[in-house]
Image 1: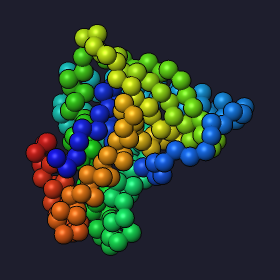
Image 2 (image 1 turned 90 degrees about the vertical axis):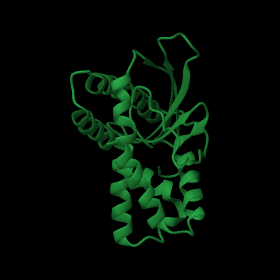
Image 3 (image 1 turned 30 degrees about the vertical axis):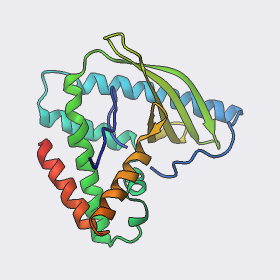
Image 4 (image 1 turned 135 degrees about the vertical axis):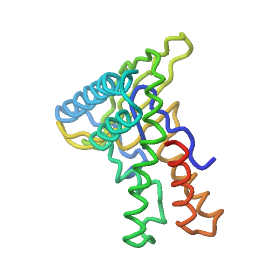
Length: 211
C-alpha cells in the first residue's frame, strides 16, 4: 500500500522540513513561552476540528472545504510535501513540482476529511511539551477513545514562533508519519523506474476513488 493511514483521530491531516530531532531540551523563558503557546495551539486546533468537521448536517464537499482550510492554516503542508518526496524533489521540473504539490494537498483532503464524519466522541488530552532549539517543540498528547480501550499516544511536532505555529510532523506511538510517507513514496517511485509520472498517476487514482 503506497500510503498508510496518516492518522489524525481528532485533528486532520498530513503530514515536513527536517524530521530528525537534534539538540537538547531548551529551558529558558523564551522556550517556556514557545512551549506554552504550542500546547495551546494544538488544543485549540483539536477543538476547532471537532466543532467544524464532525457535524452530521454538513455535506461531504463542505467537510472537505473546511478540512482544507484548517490543514493549510495549521500544517506546513508545502514543507511536508517536499520532505515526503525526498531526493526526487530537487530533480523535479517546476511543472512537476507544482503538479505534485497540488496532488499532495488534494490527496490529504480526500483521505482524511471524511473520517471526521465518523467522529465518536474521542478527546485529546495534552500531557507535556518539550522545546528543542528554541522554535521546535514536541507537544505530547493522548487520544482517548470512548470505548475505554488503550489511549493512543500522539506527539505533534510544532515549529514557528509565538503566535505563528505550524505542525511539521505527527508522531503516532513513536512512529513519524512524515517519515513513513517518505519511505513509502520512495519505494513506490523506485518500483516504477524512478518516474514521478507513476507516482502522480497513483495519487490521482486514490483521489478519484475517494470522491
